[in-house]
Length: 440
Image (tube, rainbow, N blue to C red; front, side, top):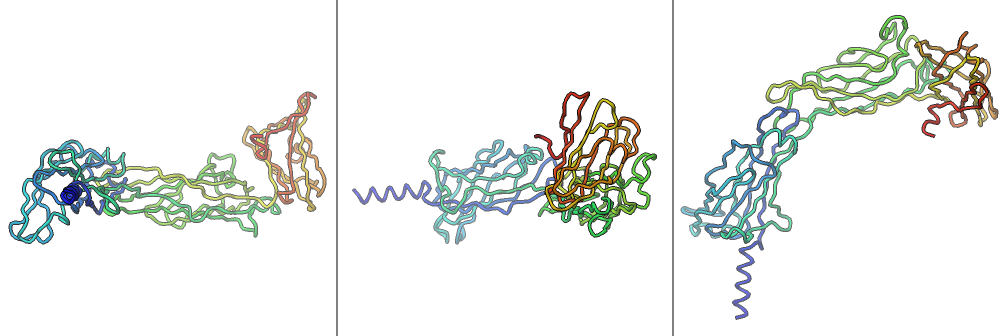
């Protein structure tokens, strides 16, 4: 009786999942841009390798992670491939039902003995399916999962265990276009040269941006053009403040591929028609005062998808470098000077052992710009005061003026602290907001 019990248990185990089906597929890969307007999107076929003994009337179901296209009709029958099959050996699956995201088959015919002796190792082809385009674009991927039961529809059969899997990815969508900044702006503004050049007396700096075209294996878009917008402060390139827009004069903005479409105070726009790296060079020939700043680059790609529809797609923004200064610098966004009822002053504390020149630059509410080097220095180990009269004299101001004022010294930045304050009608000193103390 004990041996019979063991035998029965062994047979039950073999019938209910002691073996493990394995599902494999070489997924189709499409670019999101390539299938952007596709009504339906195709997936790859898959193959299930059986690892249990099946019997007639056992049930097999293919379940998809996304609803199938409404027009897709699964095959009526599937002929499994048996290992060593001879004439007359067959395992036939007949379609029992199909719903929104699954197809169920019944083993309608099973004949062994003419070469094939088992269903273990047999392969079942899971046909390629199609999915609604919008739903698959939202999901980005789709899988198929194989499951089987005995004829009662509830007892599991041939469940995947160990290193096997009952699920395979059959389609993936990937982004085709991206940008990268391979070399960012990195100029160090030289305060010894009145901030008109970079260190080494260089007047030019460059940034290199590349469009990355990661073509998918199957369906892709076709590139038409890419437009880069380099964001920054380029007002220093303007040589004619009277004429609207940025008048370059002998300043140059060039690219080694494509065209420079426009140069504006806050951006430079460049376009081209290939997935290649583009180097933008800015040359401050006319020695405008260079501002410290950070840069970013945006890109818009124009392309045709696989259905010949044309699109513009914005690509993620990237940092594109910065311009620093080989001295200390603080900007006061609001600094009123030259008013009878407001006393505005600034203090420079130099804790180091190197004197530094003091350079003032500013612009007012009317858009006028100013630049001057003060006769006094930021002396080492001392506190140097700058009165509003020092500012008005340096800039030649004869009336009260509201400035955005930048104070720069040629002393090492780590040794310098710059503060400012105003006193309105002798009501007491009030600190001026600066970029060194924002948020404090």
